[in-house]
Image (cartoon, rainbow, N blue to C red; front, side, top):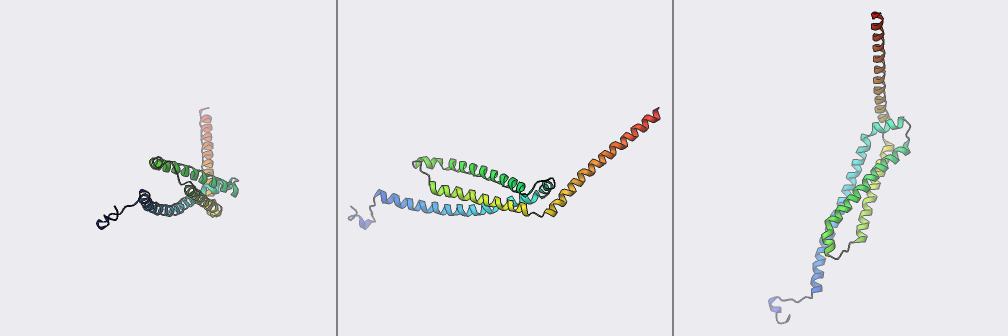
Length: 186
């Protein structure tokens, strides 16, 4: 039949070959979007590192005050790394759950096969990049200009002590006034 209708552009192809060509096109689109996702991962990691560093620099006074009351560098590193790791794990779990919800219809339609290896590598890459950004932020905590932070902490302590001293002076003045009023009444 193909020989007789060749003049009219008829080309008989098996169903398997036709589906394979459709899947090649689909896989090309998927590869393109996977590359864009990798670019998004890189940009997201840089953005996360910037946010973590900004958080550390905004907390300089708090960290300097903690240093003044006896916390050491190990405490700071543990505290910042634990906070960032918790946020990373919660964000990764939430993102993976939402992604699974988004692909659930296609997942069940195609027989329930996930690209386990590439998906695992992607999640591992996100986890590692986040932990590296967290380590950079932790390193920044240890490198924060201690003098600038301590100055802010010392100012805060002085202000609190001044308020306490003024409060004590006010109490003493009121007690003297009360005694003076009592002695005048007698």
